[in-house]
Length: 426
Ligand code: SF4
Image 1 (cartoon, protein in one colour):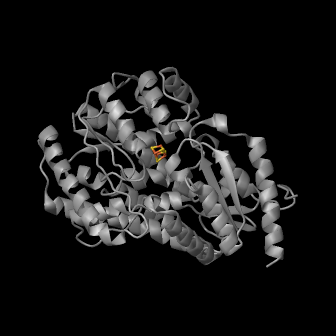
Image 2 (cartoon, protein in one colour):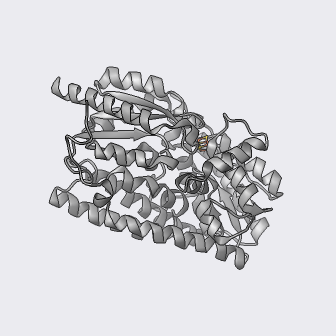
Image 3 (cartoon, rainbow, N blue to C red):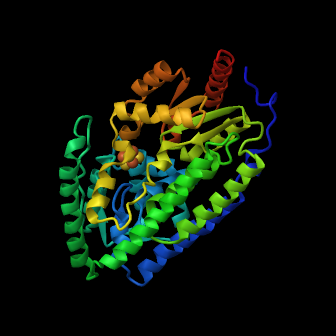
């Protein structure tokens, strides 16, 4: 039995990167920016992950992110109240729990999209936007979600249709990129019509360069995570989804990632790990359980470091120098969450080798089809082809009804025993 006492570790929080504290300032600054945008009547837009936030920054539109607000509700442990509200309004239990969190929070924390109390932003309140721009990359729920809310709030919407490239279709990429690029130019026209702001190519180049710089620092941090012991664990990376989806194209996220990088680099030089006595190195695939971040603490207390998460890396692609709208369209299509199973298996095999991974945790997310589809096939392929033990965790990202501390503890203890046996047998 793997014991939490036979391999003592320091309280996980004591080994968090000090620069992670800066994220709080970043989030608070963004929250104030939301209120200020409302006050000065700056145009705002609801967007989804994988939508072209750089086009919004280029055209002076403040991005609001309902998925991120749903995470905030989850981490603040109020998501269940909103999910139940949405279910009471007729939305099925099977639907995306981010979507239902947003429906419920809109009903309970706002009046026709006007936030009742500024403090409610900390619970996931989000104000009515000037318009909405859902992207069909990754997930069709993005489109249906924002269509539902646009209808309820009576605001204009510009959905972007993104083809998914399956095996054998790579030679069609340029045609697909032409198709998405044409929509991005139509989006520019749509924004001009609803805001009066115009598109400026010089500004676009600046925004893309900053977006690329953000991605560059994030990828450099991931490079450091190959080191044994890993200098950066999941506690320090899980909330980085915020800068990666909302801040590409402006400077504050870059400042934050630079601080993280510098500290992590020093840790590598000092051979100082995110987990004391690192015994196991893990991948966590999928969206975290926002209402139970204590799960990551528990895993770290057992001597295991989660040193790779495809989830956050997926949202930080590098941009080519002087990227065009066509390049941006390609990047939208090429989101790692659009990869087919064959490509995902190859991707995971590389990560297992490069990051010296002992085991893989796969979150079989009950209400997120894109991140759950193919989990069992992925597990079987990785176990057969690499011999790396994989554990499927059947939970939900924002609905705590699908989570049990005791069960998770027992499952992790058994899994780490398997990792021990596997290491001995190597
Ligand atoms: S189903 Fe998954 S990918 Fe789609 S909106 Fe919900 S959380 Fe996002």
